[in-house]
Each structure stands twice: as C-alpha cells, then as structure tokens.
Length: 102
Image (cartoon, rainbow, N blue to C red; front, side, top):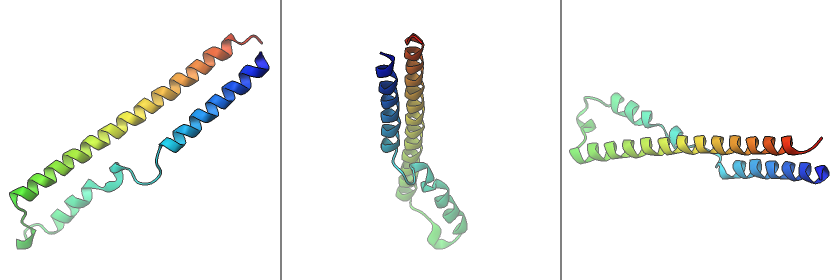
C-alpha cells in the first residue's frame, strides 16, 4: 500500500503545482501598469494652457483609478486564496503521510 500511496501523493502534488503555474499568467499584472505614470505626466505639464482637463475627463480619470485600485485588491485576494489552498493541500498531504504505516 505504501508503494501505491507515495507515488500517488507525488503525482497529485506535481499536478497541483503545475496547474498553479499555468493558471498564473506570465507578463505584467495590473499593478505594473503604472498609475503613477499618469501623475508624472500631469505634474510635468502643470500650469500649461493645454494641460487643463475638463470635468468629464477628471471624472473619467477618477473612475479609472478606482477600477485599477479594485483590480489590484482582487489580485491580492487571489494570491491569498492560492496561498491558503496550497497550505491546506500540504497540510492534508502531511496528515496522510502520518497515517501511512512505516
């Protein structure tokens, strides 16, 4: 039975880790899109006549910033959930390993 359980647990662990790597897309996340780059541009052009924004543009900017903030919070929550799921899986494997007679 021990010969069956250990390879099975190893396969499950490898499959779970591989799925986690595939599920996490590579490349820039919403956090690296740089909300600060907009601020740098606005600061550089401050005081110029063509730098004035309309109320509609200011409202759109505020909405975009709120969306980016919400998406960053959701990404953080997804990372926390993934970490908790992985920890739960490892604890379950540890419990099973303790039950296997040596």
